[in-house]
Amino acid sequence: MISIKSALAKPFAKIIYKKVQKWANNPVDTQKKVFEELIAQGASTAFGQDHDFVSINNHSDFVKRVPVRDYEALKPYVERVVAGEPDVLWKGKPLYFAKTSGTTSGAKYIPLTKESMPNHVEAARNAILLYINETGNAKFVDGKMIFLQGSPELKEQNGIQLGRLSGIVAHYVPKYLQKNRMPSWETNCIDDWETKVDAVVEETLPENMTVISGIPSWVQMYFEKIQQKTGKAVGDVFKNFNLFIFGGVNYEPYRAKFENLIGRKVDSIELYPASEGFFAYQDKQNERGMLLLLNSGIFYEFIKADEFFTENPKRLTIKDVEVGVNYVMIISSNAGLWGYNLGDTIQFTSTKPYRVIVSGRIKHFISAFGEHVIGKEVEQAMQEATEGTDIRVSEFTVAPQITPEEGLPYHEWFIEFENEPQDFSALAKKLDNSLQKQNSYYYDLIVGKVLQPLKINSVKKGGFQAYMKSQGKLGGQNKIPRLSNDRKIVEGIPQ
Image (cartoon, rainbow, N blue to C red; front, side, top):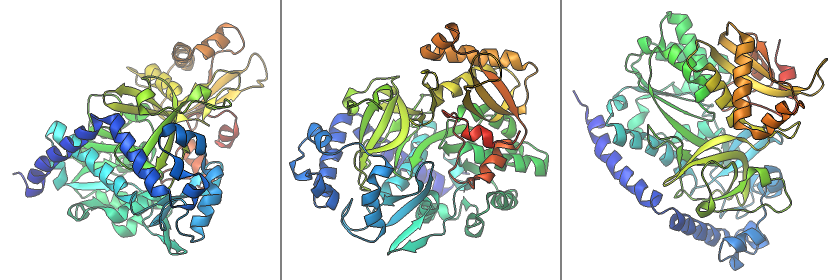
């Protein structure tokens, strides 16, 4: 029997789909309009006055007046907002600060404003509605949904609420979903991640779970605990579980492991949210990449990643980008971020409409020998090397070994296996071949005998989890970088 809720979801999904098509089919004008609105709103702020916004009429005026900044460079303005000063980066004061643990700058305080906050909520909702419109599947809205997220408890600082983004968004779950959502408020407020996951397992086991959402590495922990407790595959415990929603990392390296834990295939929707904005979501089940949200109070610029560290790199707008090029994404938004470098690198998979994949972090790469290997390349190598095998990988990261005891330097892959390969050297060869195929610099270094082929270091079970715990980064939005240009991370992983 079809419930009222699932019956109403389909016509609503169709309306939203048509709205999305309208701006997605008119990308350049949509972005131009967003840009003009942002400049008009920002003109009366301290930042707008310091950067002569009243004289900005187009993108090239903006480029001349507003340099690209990362959080550290924007910090003097942010600190004024944190201190309670109004009209600094955006009019008035922000509603919230999303507090994140920055990898380089300690705690980061990212403003969320009255204008930017609805975009986070709307994007998550629309991703689900577009899925309903495409597949016709709306039955899941009657079951229970879980969102593995940070604590919703907020603190107050100078009249502004402060918390984790996922915790802040928890306050905005629409009324019609409140009854369906899990875990309970009390469980969500547990700070210790392992205790929290145990409590989530207890609460959800008796329920009809239909949608499960979170960062893959932490959902994996939840699934493993369910399997340990019940001795069954997750798909047998939750027979109506058919939709997995995830964001934050590439799902592909986890896919085989998840299908094994679930015991069957389930549909998935990929999201690209961050404290700084909700940038993209998967709009089609059979298309690669996520639809870039061009109508959500964010103006995008793109700098080619291999030019990023040069003297005066060219800042491109949406009309100038090409498929398959690695770009650093720069945003200006109605949260008061201007020419802001997120640190993410993306690639376009399509320009009709504009769809992207996250290829890595501009700081997370290996170029100890000039090879500039990025996250997407090591993830694709892992996917290709394990496809069609029974090798299952829980987690991995890659680091350069510059001063080996003997022989040439090499890339060292630290891999935690769920199911180990019978032949480690065959796996290493496949990984290396894939990397050479994808990255011509790496190929040249191998062929030119500057590097020897990569080596695998098997990490004991639970090693990555233990490392994250030792760094105070277990759970929430935290994830292991796929690769780094030094050995700081790998030296902290227990051997």
